[in-house]
Length: 120
Image (cartoon, rainbow, N blue to C red; front, side):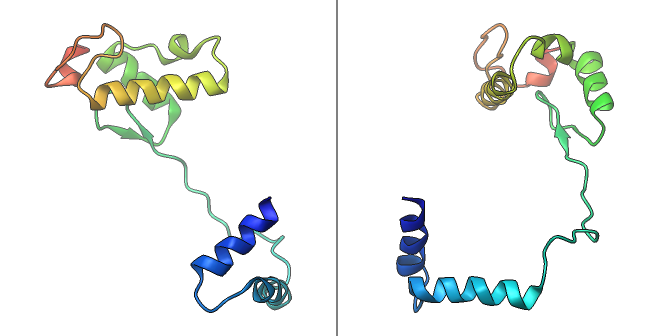
């Protein structure tokens, strides 16, 4: 099924190409570019860690956790303790969703105008 999807995308999304030209293009790209195994010029930037409550952004996980505990009284490590990776993602998404709807994710108070003040 995955192979059929590849051909569908080429046949119906890229005007003027068909499935045979895709295979030729892939072969040409490999021979032109050589090996893509050398990623030595790659510079990975640290991910931005946006606060769960306010718009603050941090680069360092330690600073992020300190901000949550000092400004919003949320112990991040205790919050995600004993959760699988998938459960952690679900929890963070739920908190972000609640905050965007101006509802406290912990006490369920609705229509809070300034969420950052609610956690003080």
